[in-house]
Image (cartoon, rainbow, N blue to C red):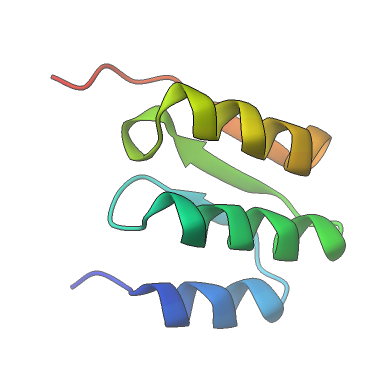
Length: 74
């Protein structure tokens, strides 16, 4: 079972560190990065979930609170 965007946002607001590998759109991922950054937490996002433009955008938002995991889209 996967978690949806609403649950992911609730978890982020509770202060957990997140790792996103699949299942969320770029808009939700950007929101999660903002939430996590505002709380001084950490988020990891797989490159399979985002394109290069979104990767650059969230890098600007998340800074050191973000890890982008580079994975091939086999």
